[in-house]
Image (cartoon, rainbow, N blue to C red; front, side, top):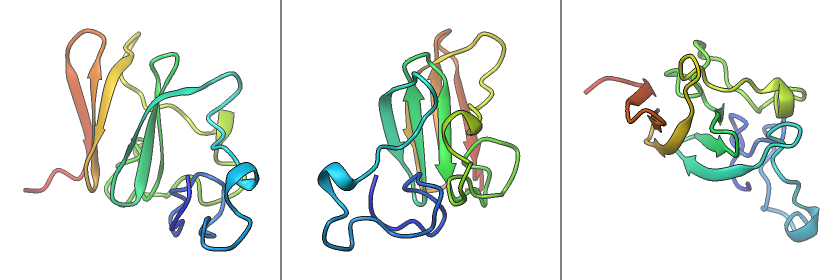
Length: 127
C-alpha cells in the first residue's frame, strides 16, 4: 500500500506517507505484514482504513478506527505504530468457526459475507 498514512492506512507501523518521494516504490516498497504464512486473497479500502481477507478466511483491518471500522471494539487506529501489524494485528471476531468469503468496505464501515451465507457489518451505522 502507498499514499496517505495519517492513521496507519498503508500498514507500515507509521504515519509517514509512502510513494511521495523518489525511490519509495518498486522493490523498495515493503509489503504489508499480515502475519506469519498469511496472504491476502482480497483487499478493500475505505475512507482511511483497509481490510484484507486472508487465505484462511480471517479478516484483518487497519487504519482509522474512529467509528470502529477496524473491528476491534476500539476507536484506536491500528497500523500507525511500530509493532501493530503482522501477527500482532488481531483478526476481526466473525463468530465461532466463521470465516469470510467476501468483504466490502465503505467510508467508515465494513461488511463481510460469511461461509454460512450470513452478513456481518461493523463501523459507522448512522444514516
